[in-house]
Image (cartoon, rainbow, N blue to C red; front, side, top):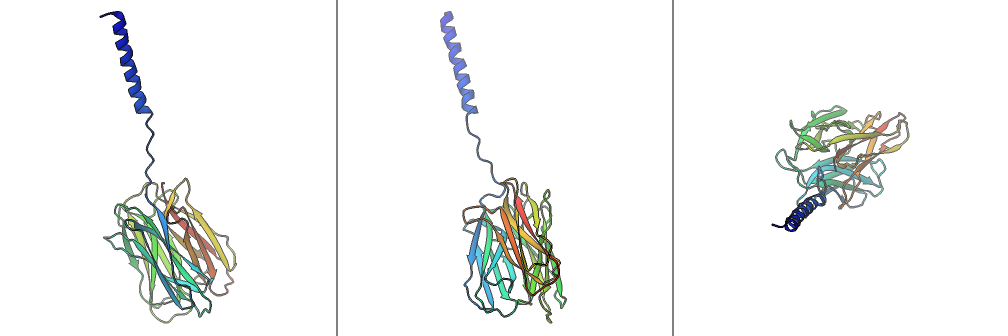
Length: 299
């Protein structure tokens, strides 16, 4: 074999090796997979009228499941209390919708409506709905904590009052967790708006799933004062997306109504923040605060 022939073969082999390596290294990296893929926010609005009770259900698109909830009262400015923020589902089936029911606390002549918000995602491994109910009695305050089964984490929250029909107000819808730890339970606390002489209870709902990468709970608190209303927004950080939310009123002991519990987002965009808004139901001289909670996962 001539020296020139050998050199040509060596050159061809080197070129093939270089092109092969180049072919491997120039392939673009695939997009990172979201911890909770397909997140969107769905809204459904009730009729607008002056009737005493209003109810509406927001349902996830076909093939998606419910991870979190929200609501908004329009037109009543503290004269309406949300009695139910009730996700469907069970301890063995994933939730897919949420029903919001609201009553006038006192007779109110104006027109108003209620919006139900459903935070929905592609199916999540292990997603279920669990619940816990308080004692049923005449006490002014009731509380219940719904805890996820061991090994699961909390994605969203809900509540339901029974027996009080517009005379009770949910003061706390409080997920546990922190900015560095995943929530796994929610506590619901409710007060009588006015003296109520019948027995009633409150139920807490928790949406729970198998562990989710980066899941944490973040929070923001309003100013402490005696103003009639306040609003606070909590946003996910570091590019995270929101699976669910909560709120907490401190210092008002049933004298304040959380009128708005509104996740951001749309039917085509993932929620990344929540705004909570509250009004005094009757004139209240004390100082109080409003805290909003967001449950956030890695995008």
